[in-house]
Length: 304
Image 1 (cartoon, helix red, strand yellow):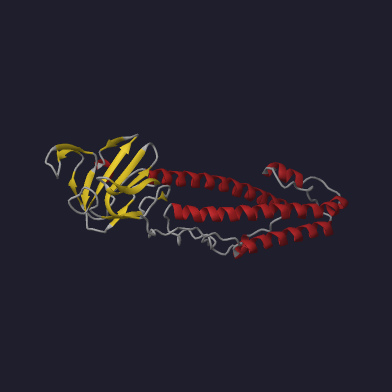
Image 2: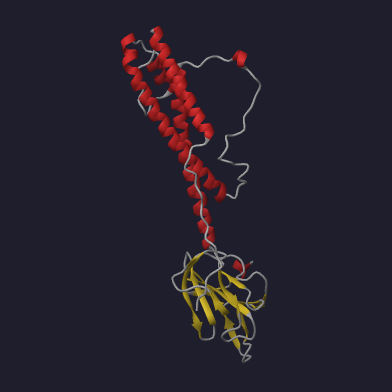
């Protein structure tokens, strides 16, 4: 017996457009580069050889850019330099988009304040007006800064990806470990171990704990896993069994209704049924069991 589960799916949103501050920054860099190249052409001053799109450190890059070049060399290499710059800026744009997307996912995964870590706006910056003390940026230094910035972006992107993997992996592992009670409100009416059978008074072993709760209140999965059984079973009534990691299995019995079927994937906290008194029961409660590798264990530590 299955009815629609009240659980809602969760989705992440991701932006696919460049932020306005980034567009302005890219435009400014291209304008500065073009102006510097035109000035070099007109005045015949020294300029660098063409720049490869990958792998030049700051020292060697300055050495190349400050090497002697003839007037004709500057004229011939100006287009190549602009093409190299455009390719580098394109790579930086792609890396920045990936960093923003990763940052937004980490904010959600880490339960951080989205207003404090807002990737839709540039970081707050400020300072006194120092126009009188400022100096113009020349072409070699500008190209060096762009190259170093591109390297920093690539490095930070790699580290963010590693952080995401660690956070997500930790959260997945935590969700697979049984924890908490299968009902929101209730009290333990019968503990794990030997007890007097409520029907015949004989001493028998109780393989779980009984948690008394209001009839038709929600029953929750205490860990993420795969539903192995969801049937009406002799003695157990409407019964649910979920398989988790490390050989752990949780069992929920005497339900009035069940909302899952064998093969369903459930997450920790999903509603899987309603409290009832089906099967061999004296009143509404959940018989809750935990087994490891086929052997029952006391659920008390997991419940607490």
